[in-house]
Image 1: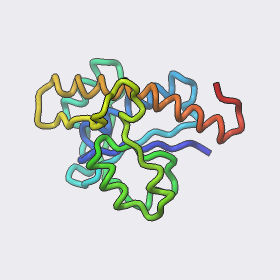
Image 2: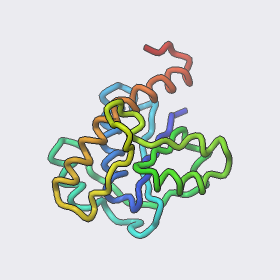
Image 3: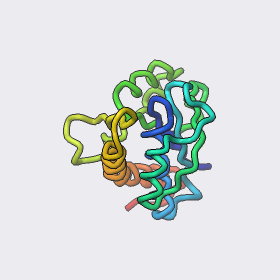
Length: 167
């Protein structure tokens, strides 16, 4: 049984697909690709069926990540199948908590930057959509920094789930 992580932003065309690809690469590098599934979605369905924003694709490609993506909207019915629902900002976390069918499902919701020990008090990943290329680069830097801590947490959870010792 796979450990399932879903990243959630607003429209699923900028931050969450970028987080998905970065984290999927970290999972593969850690040798956990067979044990961890990584996905993304948006709180809204405005872009459902579309690819990622071209600036997201450009930044991912420039840094050696995959960029294939089809946007979709997060559904409350997904909660039971997910182990972690990672919000990219507090607004997404609030919306996800509202959608959560049970307190156990709401407990699966975390802010991505809460896994970055250097993030400080502001745990939101700013939306780069209305900015320039530099905003997408800054977004990627934040996602990469938080992915290391998230990977450590997932590695522990996966080890616990399959009964292996954790390090």
